[in-house]
Length: 415
Image (tube, one colour):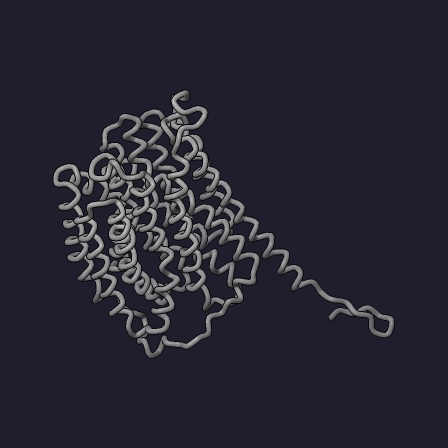
């Protein structure tokens, strides 16, 4: 439960950044470049994923100090929100709400994740699905609270209130975040094994994951602004984000269960192709509230749930080297983070008029959203190529198992 609370808070806020983005670009930072205002949101999710690169080596090198690392993260994370409250320029938001918050959040979050590896062995997919649903629940609750606070009290009071809330809710979780076995029994010094980096299966899955990540965060960032540009009430923009996150909770659990029970290819195709179709048809042809809300529900269930596939991605990538699964999971999270970081500059370059802008009554023709919608759908659809990992893995297994022949005194025999 304590792990779920951390997921609820640390990830729930970045998934709600679309509400902040809509407020910032129309109020406090209306003169700032759109790409710069969007950057804190994509940086936040990106660094939270990418930080596995520096956090995990620290945790593995000093496992007895996990609790101290979490305390440092706790202080830095809350400080980032307080710093954002006093920001006077968009670049200050990038440094505080974007970088400082996410660095602190990663120091707090990933030591907890290592404990999860110890407690769950058989049903890892389901356990991850339940854990990741915390962020989804946070994304349902937070948009309405944050929008109300922003409208009534402004950015400064809102961010300080969030900082105080985080400090109060996270502190009681610490006593319950502990390993299954004493540190002395779990500490094993092992050289980092890079065999999985030489496997084609890993790179196929990693590449598909990276491409998927460049587009998957776009609806979270832009649906509230899209709703505003459709001349809908701000409440409906909040509702779209809430439905996105709300649907992703059951989606995480479902896809975790699906990967535990069935062939991984089913989950890959359902998540990638299903989410791409929802973007092309529902977002691309939205011109009113109804298709926008249906998009939020369908995409929310299928798109973000890609992250629930990481444990199976890792298991397939390492083969029999099961002790490498945690490391490889974090590699996939790092790839996701890289894609999320890239999504802000990509979106800034894409949102501009094209040949059907203001000539088409649907989402494709609304202001500069057309190219963004197309890119999002294509990136999600391209990630379906991850299914080819199976055929690469199968061909390698057949090659290994194929019997070899030799001729001995004129007779063919099997080795």
